[in-house]
Length: 300
Image 1 (cartoon, helix red, strand yellow):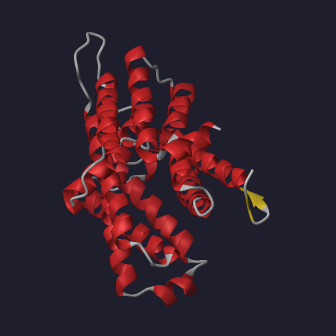
Image 2: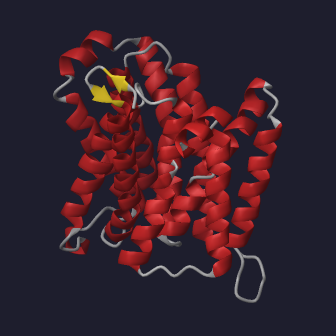
């Protein structure tokens, strides 16, 4: 097994798997938290607190690097990601955690086509194949018992959120290169909080303390500290030592763990067509993110 310094690559790979477990669990936790607070206010608290937790220990570093370039990068990366999380969580109100996770994962397949739109980079044959598999998977997920096709409002919003997640990936590539990661991340989190706050002030009523259920603050702590801050740290450390294709393969397990948790803790039931749809979406994500060498390495 390869080593990076005194630590084997396998340790970093396990760290990425741990990230996907925490992310997968966040869908269930957020679904519960949405019983206490509307999506916009919940995300405003999540990203504001995450920015605070990041900003306090790294205050000197952020002050040293914060300039017009870092502000521009953080804002332009944070706007689509803030919209992505906002639309995704509004959609989560009207769908199950498993469906939300798998439909969100389709953003990986969308990236090459958005790059074609904005950068004139023509998709490859594999991109087209992955898009076909993903669309087929979404079709099976939307199949009703009478074999009619129907996506719920939550499912449609989740797919819209996936488009914003795909756009965020491109914005990171366009604007984030060469910037200090901590500083950009701080501005990004603050921007995401501002996006969610703007929506909340216009479209949602103020949170009422009496609406908060007993487990809300534990749920909030999980999404702020575990699925936001800890995952961000583990992901960015691990991805320096794991090839990008292999990292993407491992991180695609997020939707698998989300579905497992949804079945065990939320009582979600999978029909045969929905299970097949999930499998097709997962295959499309895996194929879209890994080269042939990466696939052979993971298989080995």
